[in-house]
Length: 262
Length: 345
Ligand SMILES: Nc1ncnc2c1ncn2[C@@H]1O[C@H](COP(=O)(O)OP(=O)(O)O)[C@@H](O)[C@H]1O
Ligand SMILES: [Mg+2]
Image 1: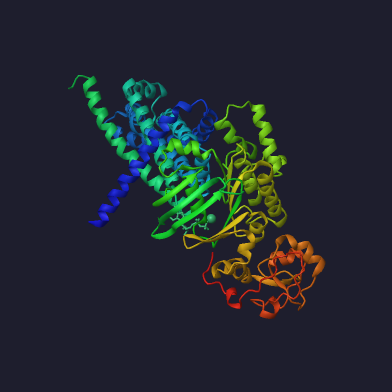
Image 2: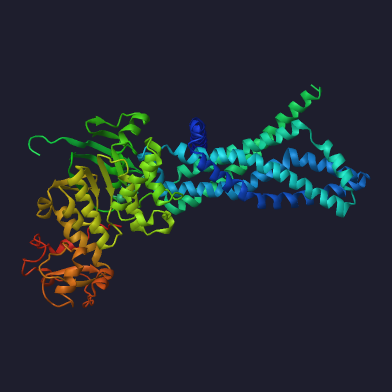
């Protein structure tokens, strides 16, 4: 009972802190221009530098996915259709959250550690004493950069994944590129693409806020920094799969509405 | 200084409970405008916490804190931001922003709070970095420099906006004696030339006596004695005595070898008197008037370790002649004051 109260109240407090920090950061987006240098630096660290690893992941996922789909479709003699399934899955699901995962592993954890180190090294205090709001100086550029580069990386990752699927389809399943691409086109419509980007945007904001909040809340020296980093990964992954479910549910309703089913 | 001097900071009955411990316990003291107020006390007892209260980084559980006669405990965040511009703060580790060069770190407050041109900012940064002797290192990043340099850069940044009150959290700890001495001189110069109010937390008693107009001994959550350096040196309060003599020796003696300088009382060890040590006492002799040096200090001074007693004996400690370089060498410590009563980590 007591244990539950503690866990729940701590979780709520943490969520509240994170949410307030996010709102504060959004409030400081008036300083976007003033902080452009920090934002660009972060965009580079979060986005550009993540392209190789994200591409590698997505390429192999696309390839494996094509193989598995190919096995099943061969049973119905429909191997030509793999492109459709791959694109649908990549655009709607795999692209957004696999790049989300890659970013959390590569960026979220180190972002929490970096800010946590600033906290324990009194740098955050120093900023406050200099009347420089850390929500503006540290948090806002990171959340902005993350939420821009998350969707960008999703686009890149999705494309690479589709290419990976195409390569396997062509070399191992015997599907021509023409067929692959022809059916691929049917795999995603504009709504799907927007929805995939929306997902990625939501994941990015969630992951960046969690990373910044855990960093800001760090206490207890190097151990605390490690803890902040670990908590960030666990919590962000949880949020991504959770939000993903919500957004897919929404998507289903919107899709049915658009296609006149309801 | 006659009559009632203007007060820069006033603590009145300030209490703070942290993690179940009463870190501040009805703490009261005043800092006068233009003075250098030194806070001494054992590690981990709440001196940094006191400084944090002064700039509103931590709210007290009870009590009143006034800065230039304004109550800060009830201020809004916005009001606090304005109030903090009166302060420059040197944090214990320098607290430089890791991704900015030293130049950019010192420039930061100017960029954030002034509309100065780039050129004007560069002039000020140069001036501040030259004060702390780091202009030639301006392109370096915090990760590339030593702890002492970080502290000096932190000081340059604290001074960037010419604050009226400067807080120093252990400005000389971890610095080599020459640089520590320079920081002391700088603190004195800032007082002399800019009439700055300065509040310095330190363990370094030489430094405390060198720079302090008044010294307050922080113990168990409050100030057990506040007085001029002379008053503190001749204090009869046992805890103060223990700290400025035995406490210091106790802390050093665990890893100390003995070295000697004539006429200087224990605890008055000056890191600055290395030259004097070399000149006067190249070898640890059995002469009275021992002072404790840490191994590094002894090595730096080229003094051969003596027979390495854990503590100097009574006889070793008794100053025979007191005409030495430090005029305060009058005190004969109680032997029991050498035992640290409380471990200070
Ligand atoms: N934010 C905090 N939460 C809990 N305990 C704290 C906090 N800040 C400091 N303390 C505790 O208060 C005590 C005094 O710390 P501090 O003021 O840093 O000591 P010092 O006198 O060495 O500067 C320490 O035991 C420290 O663990
Ligand atoms: Mg401290």
